[in-house]
Length: 380
Image 1 (cartoon, rainbow, N blue to C red):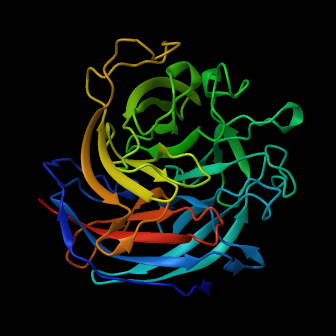
Image 2 (cartoon, helix red, strand yellow):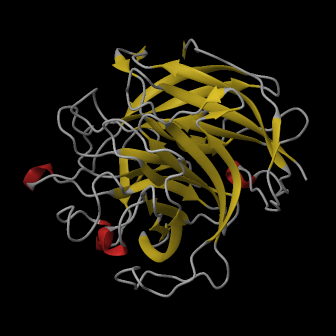
């Protein structure tokens, strides 16, 4: 286990969550459900870019989930061909009610393909984004794939793997989420399966990060878009439903400056119950920064299953219900918010309250960090 130095650690105050009355189900189903009255940001911990573990650069952490033994699985979005083999890590996070103390790497695991070999370290073949612990102790992972021509094109996927990285199976995802030409139909490059959730009853949910080409334009400063939350049944390995999730316009009050186009997307879903999720909306504007919104997204009895809809443009349907829980704009309670992409439930504090953990993908960039945020979940 390697201890990592942090660049900052703070304790900050509490914030109310407006009108939230939902139920939390614990990782592994061991804790009783309970209401939430608010979130208190305990603190943050940052790992500097270019930190090495076993000679490999640590970073790109895009998904995180707590294991039954209290450690965390965290996946890097290393695609291969840049900083080694696509991989995930076992981490230990140490925080209490007063501060975030440390993050330690326990081990690094290479992701293997169906052929039993580690994924390519010299060629882009995947874009790992989500990771969740399966009920049987295995892991589910999601990939945005890689858009290219010919042999360089790799489709997105959701797979089950073992904790040693070995392949178990692939879920059957609808062809509508596949890359075609990145222009007229199908998926948009780098806008696919980031979010990943497992509900207490074992169902798996993922979503495209921003709109499919058929469903309309992606988010902009002037308008939002709509994505599809995809429900997968582990028993059959197939898709059983899709639900519309509306994304808002990019929430900045001034025109961004810089080389990168502004965007907003859905990088993560965390199951609260079989029908409720904490959704992470992550917006970025170059020269402005990141705005992170935590949203309670609910599947109601009359939410439309849009699986049969070829396009959502002009269609009539009822989307998932959304309720804003918390907005963290640019700097939140003295903490500069980075590129948050992953979310996990954490352990209980000595007072019995649950915790929530967020993690930021540093994009392996010198001006970013792998940022961890810990919240206390305040009871009603």
